[in-house]
Length: 291
Image (tube, rainbow, N blue to C red):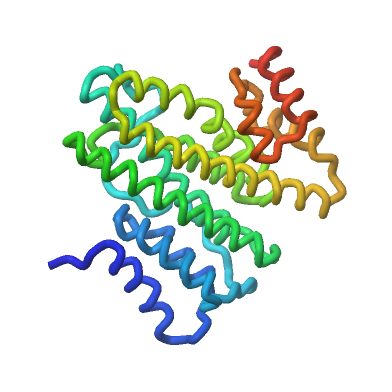
């Protein structure tokens, strides 16, 4: 009989703990990044967070950083371009399942993004690693909630096609933590703050009360995740003597992410640490999109 996923996650970290009392955190995170089984990855992520909180890990900043073109993922879902992901009505059982699947895929990718933020960037304060391990663990929890709900609808993670946009941005920003903080939590994840309430309303109209409950949990946690991104973006700007708003605008232009879309959830974004000037910039850029 195969081990329970949570036990499997514990076995992953315990096997690495066996040789040293305080093993290298980066080696453990790298190992979990490359796990392809979603259950094992989610459980091992939760285990690593618990071990970090218990003081069982220490970061060895001299460990070489490996290039990760693709993290571990299952053979399915099949990855296609965003345009090839079919739109379906949430008022059909299949359409609702497809939406839940899309959200689960985002959360699975978010586990990898958070783990990569831990693994890739060195010589940062311990609080940075604790923050992103917290994010990774919460993304694993979100994935599990959505995957379990998907099963109640008669589907599995992998039954629908998905796209790889989140990880593609991770690759583009792998060279600099400031760029990563600017463009992943502050752009891609913050977009989730804007659209999640509307998705929740659609699911409520479709009569899926459990999905609405899950989205409420995710939305609350994601405010914290974006706040963490804002915190470390501000830290890195201050460390380098950069003005945050001007630097943000420059990076948006440089990386082709200026095509921002309204509406912006002003309340959630303020709770997540966006300043009034930053929100004004977002409105300006959305009103005057560039090619």
